[in-house]
Length: 551
Image (tube, rainbow, N blue to C red; front, side, top):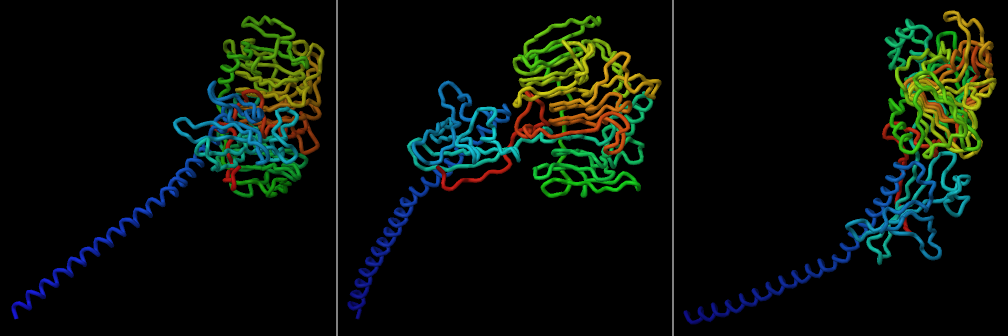
């Protein structure tokens, strides 16, 4: 019995060894399978890593282009002829490649990586490439919307065939996007003719939006029947004041009408007025609750630009622009002695700045007599320009009849117009941008509608320019005296307060000018030299998407 038990035990011991060996075999098989699976994932992991680095390279290319575009708003006009990043690397901006024939795109390697990117400026449908000819800017720009597109393509390394591409649409933000821009839809407190009225308006109305001005006896300016704003409009104010049937925007165009207050975005001026405006915006409505856009408080940075390659004058300055690409200039010293120089060369960088040359006290526009101190940084200008130019003043810019660099001398020509269709002009004043209109007054009353005894009658003035008044308004001097015809502005007007150019109702003026303002659509994508944009606002990406498949 005992011997049998020993045999049984021995037999069980052999069975246990078999189980142990089988367990080890199964474990080894699981380990081998896991290793094989992990090893098989390595190529997939590598592909995933390459895809990510390729997309990151495309994003780097897009950021490269955006950075240069924000430094130079005309960077896009160079097409594929932009400067190289440095002496050792190629310019990575190329013409559009459609996947046919040899790929001539230039690639740039991202520092510290093997990944590369290339950038293409995409042409519009009526062209086969981006054109640098100023008269063919529609080869890139959608003239209706002011947008253009680039494609940034990345690859993980030079030898790889993998590609990922991002197509980005650019549009420029800023008050040059509007024929009409204001911060406040009220009369400038400094435009009143008496000191008491100016002080009262400054205390009750300055820097206040419409709701905060209610009950303060502020002078509100309305849009009336017959008023036409032929282009996009933006005001930081709560609403537009309407009496009748004014028209905003142009039919068939992308002309937005924007206010920061609630819908409908306009109110009627009292119980005796109707408010039935025609809104030619894409939605046929005012865009309410829009974001406010802040203007710079000073143009001092332009003085620095003018000193570094432009032209700077001190004190009262009179300029006549000439189609020859030169100008006649009279500049007054602190003692009031003027020096006239003819055929002055155009500023190299396109910026002319007039600084103050001492204390500056001037009359308000409603009592303008043009006898300010010669130390004032005022510039009087008219004429024809064939090259782009920005004129800025520490005090006021006055559009006036100038002749051989002097005020009028018998000339009635106060027009400021372009002689070349591609040239742009900017007028930037820290204070007012004004239109010349001398009168004789008795107190606040117009004694003579026009001061014909000393100055010429100037009527039907034409201005081709982007106008910017940083602290005050675009205004006609003594706008409440005399009938002057039409004031035709083709360009853009931006001002802190709304400046009147005449009085009356609709097409029946009592004094001053009738408005004829038309937006220069080039300002959606072009600007005068070094023209100022709202703070932190320039070209930006409004939408982007990945193109699949990439080329």
